[in-house]
Length: 402
Image 1 (cartoon, one colour):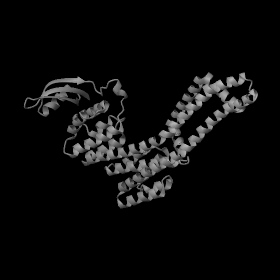
Image 2 (cartoon, rainbow, N blue to C red):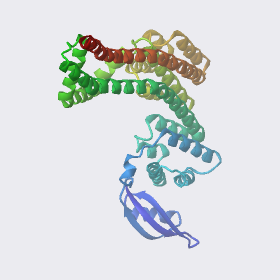
Image 3 (cartoon, one colour):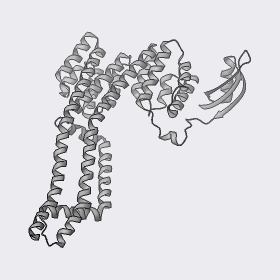
């Protein structure tokens, strides 16, 4: 399908301009003629999104998607057509890259495609969760409700991520500052004192010798050390991106004290929230479980969900495979079982997600409370060792002077 810019006149003689997809010019002219337009000009436009060099590095943020879903839901709920709503939004969206994507979605629908198919052309912006929910909303005629649910879901996910990131800011700053101080003292300050001590004929104690040797190695082979760190980082990142590496990382992550408990709670919250949003929007349970498996964020939990999907295919209920896996808490499994029996699974899953979101907040605070003193002790010990490597020979030098 090619993209064409057309000019035409309607039955009243008013000039019309627009962009539409079609197989060729003849097909477009025929389509426009069937709706009462007299075509005056058709020009082919290069397909795809035209962006400036700087726009290619602009990211579509969660806030952009949330606002888009809310505004589109309100317009459709107010009785506006989907095309009119999208055309209005293209004039309001500030993010140029996102604006061009919405225009491309508009052209796809105008050419006869569905909304979900038009969104699927941009998988980096609209994930499978969004596409399947929009498709269910189109089929059931509840697109505005589905878009509102998507906005609420995205808000919950963004809030959870911000809490985790916010809790880690102070420990990360502490590590960076501590590391910088340690490197400055060991590379620049300690060698100056060592030079003075050696000229004074003072024998260097073991701590000073260790720090001095370390500083000499770093100063002479800093490029090798940096290259080594980068090589190790790239290798580990590549390995953990493979199926075997991801499985190993997620397996041991769940076993780490405190951190593993937090990772499990985050995965369960994401599982419950995503499945509740999908089932409430009318997405079939098997498709919902398939999507949840891909977005849950932990391979161990994802494998459990895969077994759940296989069990549901064979006629089993969701709660039973979860109970057998022993990866989900008993209270969560019990609530899911009650939801299945009462026909209110989405409601129960939402309650589970709300509970774990709150629980995650407390767990993050607890983790931060534990991490801060540990980092302080480690950084303090390192700085203390460096100071000892300076003061010990200094005391010996004072004895020599006396």
